[in-house]
Figure (tube, rainbow, N blue to C red):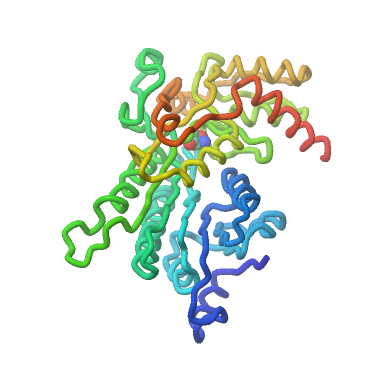
Length: 362
Ligand code: AKB
């Protein structure tokens, strides 16, 4: 498929009506397409028969991903000009807005992170609202939030609270968490209250649906920029035969899930009957080992693994502010969330065979 630079997009749409004629192509827009979730999501959408994917990322997608998309664009979601040009070229009916800076990276550049995480979200919501007004249909807007929206003041509170519900402890301690909780509220506003006093308001322009993901563990990609990355980095390092110094204490406990379960949950929520949804934002979780328990499993499957614990106090404080687990009853009740992997099967059926194959090639 084609890779279109921003400048080409701008040129193409400034000319006469697009080569597609007056009718715009139906499209599903995926931002942050080159990221960890983007890799899994685009493959799953394509496998489900979607041929209308247009993908944006700040960097060019790899050839394999590009082949799954109708078109890919290299550009910045903060560039309203690019989004405006896409508005003229496509009839966007669904948005998966994945582009974001994660919790560790944002703590070096919080203002820049706000610009991307909130400014970018605002631009995508405005694009979706403009689209809904132009084609007259509600746009489904899928948004990945995070357990980083939670802020449990200290370890005693964290351990006492146990699995928390969606409406508890919403005092995040990172810019990323602040961004995500605000973006959740922006999405809900656009879905339920947008221009509520305007005479020409259009009710229900967006169908905003959001999952607060726990730490995600992928066999296909190695995470960076996140504070939950230690689990995935540990298993990838073991498979690659490299030592790994874990940046949190052995007793650190938090919720995780495998990337395939995360993608399946996201698409299941996207396809759920709106009448069954009691809320816009849902918790999901699969397993919540301590870092030591996770390391024990890594050593069981990779006996030569060299794992040490060298806690980074600042990153440790971030993970200590996140819950030991979350209550995902609403997701299971409303739209049938049911992860395939628990901790043992995550290793046995997903991580070990796939990371072993990944590094066997190298
Ligand atoms: C991060 O570590 O920042 C993310 C998250 C928990 O949302 N993976």
